Image (cartoon, rainbow, N blue to C red; front, side, top):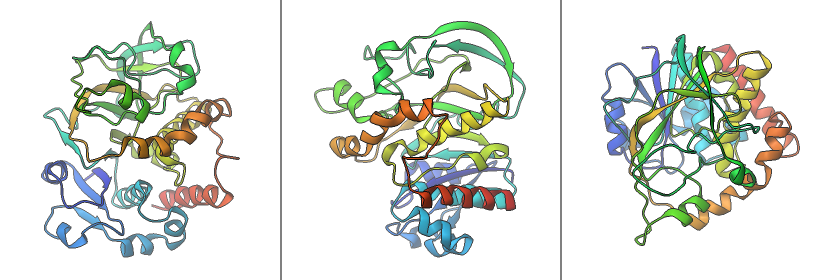
Length: 315
């Protein structure tokens, strides 16, 4: 198999994970954590990495990342590469796949719509049609630029995407401010996005790690940095794009239709907000610094990122 799905969870096998495990053309890798009920994964058709398995891969990286963090899925990326991955999907355990899940153009030469915001970053959710009148923005889009959101059509371009980010119906992983503003009287959000053509942008695009497919060729530059809160996947996305820009490979990210329904695990919206504060204050600075982590994380965290890269390169 050359296509792998990577996730982390502290839950028993969910409806979504059972469906991913049943896919004949994808192999599911579940990265366990200290709180995960390990025995319940013995009968699931997946590769399950226990905490001990992860420490065998690299005790140093394990210590650097720490426990009870979604960033443990970095070990899933390493395992997928070791097993010959060509494409790596990253999902959350509460994202139930739709019939179109897995359809992708990663690594293919395709023609897509090129859009532009005129800013350093473009919000992919801006002006997308859905069943709601609310104006959502993508988690990790700088809140200081929300008033400057716009999209203009540039034309059709041919690109070879390295990442495909698909959207999510249901109650998606938007930020806590957005959730508090837009939820209904019962505290719920239920989005159903209209379909659209694949699009890319001249600028940075935020994408999270709940429903994406990444080429194995660039996974070494996609590292989820621990201890930066709920911005880790978005900053990883921005840094990957900066790396590709530096190599002359931009744009390399496309957005596609919703391919999951998020049946959201229980979340404390104020707790989420507390983990998002760093991102709200620092994301614009991060982008303007060419996605440099210096001053935002410790030297040990930078070393962990380099350790991860070497493990991926070693294969």
